[in-house]
Length: 85
Image (cartoon, rainbow, N blue to C red):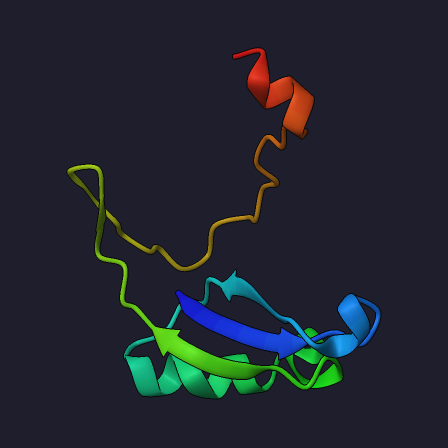
């Protein structure tokens, strides 16, 4: 997970720093940085990297990446939809 920051002139005249995370598959943190620097949105918004975290487990589950799987879009819920859960 690469945590990035950027200043958006359309929000508060660019005074406030916005943040987001990119999740990239990489063999190490250096490769994760390199891949992130190549992301179009990262370059277009003149983002910078605030931090990088290797994710190896989530809630007691080991994260395993297997190459060759077809990418599937996960379920997305809006703010109101998620409140109803």
